[in-house]
Amino acid sequence: MKNNIIVFRANGPIRNSYFVENLKELNYNIISYPILNVEKIPNAKIVFKSESVILTTSFYSIFYLSRITTERDFILYTLGQASKNLANKLGFKNIIECNGDSASMLRVFLNNNKSSLFKKKGALIYLGAKNISYNLPATLTELGYVIERYKIYKTANVKNLNTKFINLVQKKSIAWIVLLSRKGAKNFYSLSNKVFSKEEISELKFACLSKNIADVLIKKNYNKAFCDFPNVDNLKKLILNNESKYGT
Image (cartoon, rainbow, N blue to C red; front, side, top):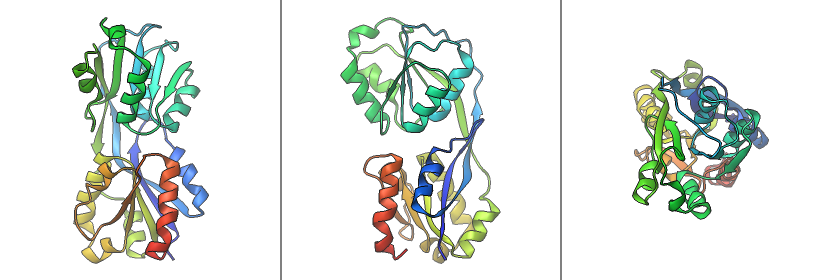
């Protein structure tokens, strides 16, 4: 019986359980496995001021931000409910949550601010991973903003798929595999093609948080669907709407 949903995500210093907890409403057995490992990047001291505006597009950016400054009064842009929840928990007071992706944050930020407000160095700061799929700081620079970018963590690929996951695939007991990031999807794609036959892969169904992620799965034997707008509610709807299509 295909009663398991597998979520592949980054493994870091704290656990992001938001997606897993919300997917439990689908009445499947939800299992999470790491596909990336998060590693801190040592930085020179970053000076934050109460009047600074901080842009963060990931859960772990907020965690590391809380470790490198005691300032909590600056405006903090976050991406997604999990990040907002963590920012609240860590004591940040002026949170602007931008539901969606980095392009969504850009739209919200531009609606809220004039470039003339951010000509001073240090007033606008972007904190994130070493490698980012959408270069928000570069876009803002092109639009006339002065923004400082700090790379505060990096992600490394896991070397092997979990043996328990491999067994579940072989037993044909997986209803859906959930992929939440492009880099994670790339690593899964590479590892899965080394482990599974074309027939085994064709038995799997992939729920991707965005089209950008789904596009990584380029072989025709990958049965994939993706959210038009990336959040957990749309991911749940995606799975429910496709159950009849795939005969789950």
